[in-house]
Picture 1 (cartoon, helix red, strand yellow):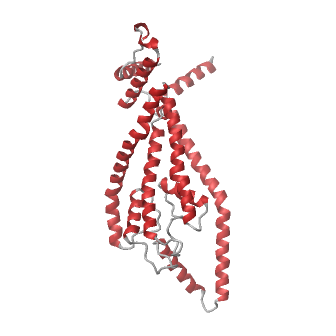
Picture 2: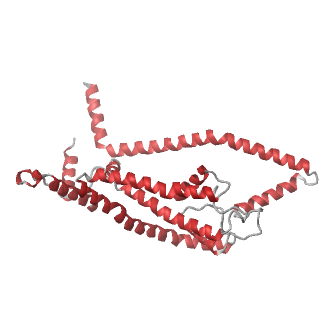
Picture 3: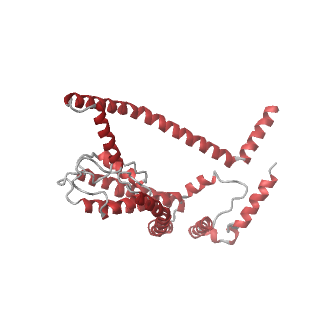
Length: 339
């Protein structure tokens, strides 16, 4: 009997605090995911890091042994200076051309900064440039987010909402099923358009990249991570890159358009009914009022079911959908009636 009462109490507690328990499980799962990723990266990358350090150590010793006139301290000073310049985007190799702060390169820099990609290969050197960068980003990122939001919503009306509504009425299928099929097809097409095809193009233009490097650059860039380990257009050989400014301008356009395409796909998947139901598992359960957009979707689904089902138009079989206020009142009444 005691065990039965304990099971009943646990069931009531779990039902009453369902959203809080789901949120707790989500937080724990995310922490586990972070720890697992850190462990896997450590296992994979540590041997390569150790091997590279040993190769550099051997190369340094060989250089000092072959050039006895150079002291270890002087070489250390030179390497420190080279690394500092490299962190600011200036390389000791091929410094005969100035590509960092011409107009096209500056445009590429501003686009990567405002989209929060930030490769880090080019950074402001002067105090004036750093101060202006703070001021520019302070207003530029909100404006960029607003611009992307408006652009994505306009595109969503053309490539997502209209096709889903059209095929919903055309095929007489449920809107959730049509939306899922459309999101899958749109994701595959976008991956082909902004990942696979550009990776093949970079493979042919960047001589030192393989296909995985090109695909890696496209994915890291369009996800706005921008690690900066791969940046196109850094080849100093003029024969490999005869039009560096045009090439960098094309990359800037690609990054902006590709980011818009990725945001459209993410927003399309975010509006799926299955995604909505999944998010509602983590909302507070006391008062869950449907927003106007969800109410419109429910009303449209109900009207489409009445059009496709002849029995739904009969007076005896008419289904009444309660209003939002009635649903909220019902939820409050149910929460009060629970022991």
